[in-house]
Image 1: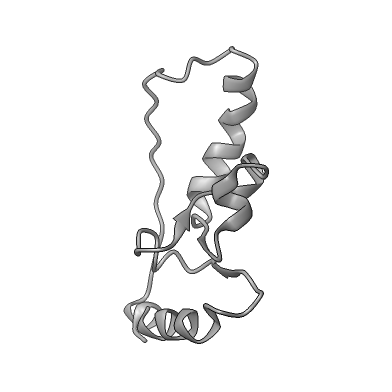
Image 2: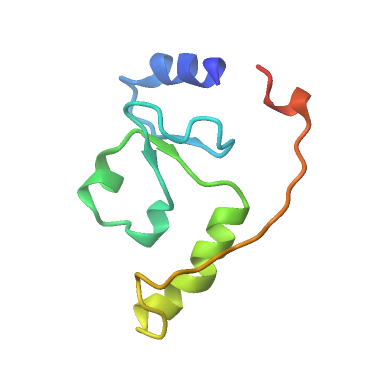
Length: 95
């Protein structure tokens, strides 16, 4: 994560957008977390230089139920429980 924050510092004044797909920096200051494709025209998504996208399971779930919510088949406040398992190696998360 420290390396990613260092790179963000290097490119903060460049005319580029940095996208973190590692899920290591979900809620860092100055970063937007989410799926920008679901709201591409919002001011935050248009202007944000640093975007952290969810890992594999969250977008799969969001993209699965989003059409159901949009069509009012599933209400936004419906209680939903998801059970998923994943394996991660410690060496994969160390900088």
